[in-house]
Length: 444
Image 1 (tube, one colour):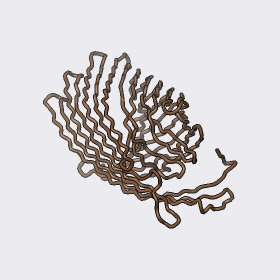
Image 2 (cartoon, helix red, strand yellow):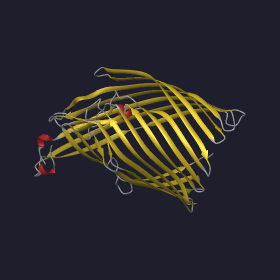
Image 3 (tube, helix red, strand yellow):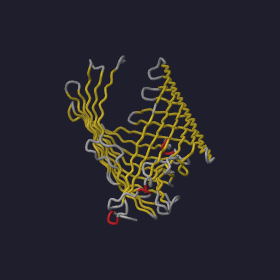
Image 4 (cartoon, rainbow, N blue to C red):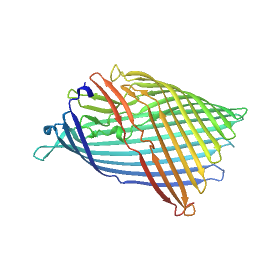
């Protein structure tokens, strides 16, 4: 394990990438309204068609601390990655109001998703020829079908209101790596109940209690096994065998309404089964691979505060803060993957309505340090700002936004294992300035 005091070598690696990323989305909606107010049926059909081709060239040079160039350590690598995703979404919702405050909602939803990732990575030999890198030439397919049905009933009786829901789903998934003939079919059923209760108190106060079961499904980057080559010693990839995580969330809260806004506070408990977290493994040659895996569980208890306040007619403030204690158990992967952490995060948004149809917004974010199963993340803080103006008789909008005003959105993490310790300081995107113009041809 080295340090800057006994530096052995310095490596420079550059990446040149060309990318094509067309996106299409098609939507067809049918809505039927009945005589009774609020009585309606809506059918929605959507097609999401996504394709991306990425061609990346990497050049790497290595030097000794005294500046001597090590020509035999030079590398030229290339990766070609084609990603395809097509998803059909069909949803039918029916709403029937059975009283002044009460209504019944029910519906069905079907999702059919197909994803393909064709990837290959090569290394250039001294004679200029290309040879594939080991384990980086494959054809990955992911097919996911989800069928669901739900029902929600809600009503208000005097000072008491309730909403009770139930959603049932059947999921059928199959992943395959064709070059290595690795096939993993999975199917399972799940039920997601939810209960929300509210009791109105005097002087614009209310008590709220809720329970819900939730699911977080892996996204494409969590599943795709393609390894990024931005760093020749530290690889990042997805995990085709990753399962979704399921959470049971209980919350007890209070809300107070003011003339100019509201303040809500709540305490909550959350238990997550099969918690998804990225884990790093380091081989004997010093190279590492980081990919998401399912831990045993995570549980958290905390308090959350949210406020919306109109300070002046031209200035609105939103504030959110969350303080929590969490325990993580990943001993199914490693006996050392068990930790607990205290942390908090806060966000404040200011919205300004200025003369001459000008709107402005400032959003400040802060996330305190937090421990994970294999390490910890340092504090994260950044500020975004935007200003917009209506033009051309309010049919057009000119918007100027600055993301990460102070260029401070750096992800700093420390990861430690049995045979390694890694300090990472990453900034995925520098300060970004965007100027956009929207024009509404036929505004309804």
